[in-house]
Amino acid sequence: MTLIDGKAIAQKTYAESKAAIANLKARGVTPGLAVVLVGDDPASRAYVRSKDKMCHELGMHSVKHELAADTAQADLIALVKQLNADPAIHGILVQSPPPPHIDERAIIETIDPRKDVDGFHPISVAKLALGDADGFVPCTPLGCQRLLIESGIEAAGANVVVLGRSMIVGKPLALLLMNKGKGGDATVTIAHSRTRNLAEVCRRADILIAAIGRPEFVKADFVKDGAVVIDVGINRVDDLNTPKGYKIVGDVAFTEVAPKCRAITPVPGGVGPMTIAMLMANTIASAQRFAAGA
Ligand SMILES: NC(=O)C1=CN([C@@H]2O[C@H](COP(=O)(O)OP(=O)(O)OC[C@H]3O[C@@H](n4cnc5c(N)ncnc54)[C@H](OP(=O)(O)O)[C@@H]3O)[C@@H](O)[C@H]2O)C=CC1
Ligand SMILES: Nc1nc(=O)c2c([nH]1)NC[C@@H]1CN(c3ccc(C(=O)N[C@@H](CCC(=O)O)C(=O)O)cc3)C=[N+]21
Image (tube, rainbow, N blue to C red; front, side, top):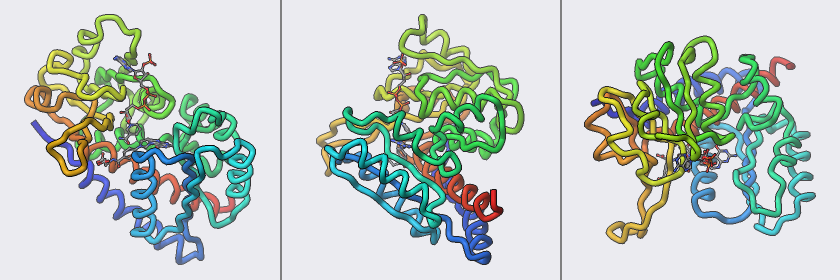
């Protein structure tokens, strides 16, 4: 069994990112990312902080807007428009999910598609569905694909089962792995909460990807011997034996599943670090396009 080291693979992509940033800076352009967080969900705060930290480490421009939970929709829209017009910003990310009084679709549709580094705008979604290479692909799916490529795991022709159909992870990931070309060409099945005989469907997978948000839901009987398992889940569960009183676990029951696998990602240290790395890569790609006058 191989443990797929997401931190190490993320580091490799940062080496490429650094070279690209140096190149842009030589042309007078510093890639800039704006992150908007509404409300004070602690997990979201931690995530926003790590993005900010990574921007600084890479020498990118980073702005953080932390807004009160009762911020009006119109004020949020106005902020996004201001960021659209700001030439120092190449990527805009509005942390999901926003509080219930906010219409998330309206916010996403306000983002300039050229700055949609999350890949959530309908134009980005359509480009991914069409197989156009010039749209932004959501960071977590891109990170999962990159993990597979860098680990020498061939998606082409493989039976991939994606567990979960959200717009952030499951659906775009299924499209990405199904599309033609490098890291794609898989035979993809999407499973969700209405799927019948879920364990049996998952057992057909050569590559099983879990993105459901259910702690340690995927058990040994979901997994074929020799399968590759990618665990996207980030779940906080109480654990009074730790200093913080909680720990982070994935959607996969790692201890019982890992011995059956050809390769598996840990949580933390698997997909999470790749998501941040791909956000940086998307922001750099955006800055390159702006610099080229696109
Ligand atoms: N590592 C990373 O970078 C990231 C990690 N995450 C993590 O990934 C997980 C999924 O996130 P996200 O996609 O946003 O979650 P959502 O809650 O938006 O979607 C969950 C999906 O899983 C399905 N599902 C839920 N319960 C079951 C079940 N018991 N059996 C089968 N399917 C089920 C749902 O089905 P249905 O549609 O039928 O309701 C839904 O399609 C979370 O743990 C999240 O924290 C998310 C983003 C990035
Ligand atoms: N607009 C938007 N875009 C997103 O991409 C988005 C979002 N909203 N909302 C929330 C989810 C969640 N998400 C994570 C990214 C990185 C880690 C990560 O780096 N995790 C580390 C540390 C985990 C820890 O210890 O807390 C790891 O897995 O090793 C986790 C979760 C992005 N999301």
